[in-house]
Length: 275
Image 1 (cartoon, one colour):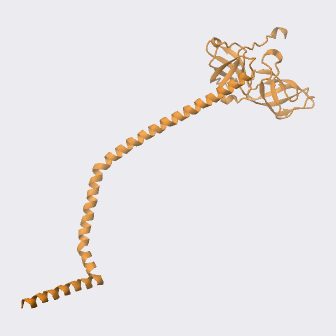
Image 2: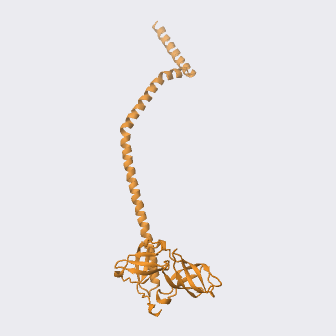
């Protein structure tokens, strides 16, 4: 009897296992398990979301504050680096200017120069002057010529102990005796209200052309000879006039002037009693 009961239990167990396998294969068991587990999964998801919200509530504000502090520190560091780069670029530019001035001075050993920095510009639209940081204490005197490695700038028009004023060749009151190198003819460089310069009083017999070089002639004793002034850009020639003129492009850009050389050993000739 006992043996029959045990066999019956095995049969029932086999039938249950077979039935579950059939249910699983048919998809019914999966659906049933899904129906049972879905509520559990939903509850677990809801709990996880609430835990995450609580965690972020207590942790994120501190993270944001820290990130903002780090971001500000990085921005301050970047600003410092940018300032240093600008300063280095400025120092390099000034070094290039001084090197060029030194090269020009070495090319004219017969002259003595005092290097000076431009510290101001005359605000008047009708006067073309700049201020430099060297004066009588540095050996600067009235009427000394002022140049750069590119060419003629002007002359000293006023002096104090520690600073001087330079009248540019573009000033309306400036006149410079000049020579057109290629044409081998003399003339006079004249400034203007508009800061344009031109060479005047050139004889009609000479053919002036664009691109020709204009230098100081040394006549009159106001400036040393052979200092570049600029180049001819336009020629103004009328048949009925005694003289012709030409517009000049200055060799130096006076709008970006930063440093100059004063020809300290040049003493302009005083020819006013002879005029």
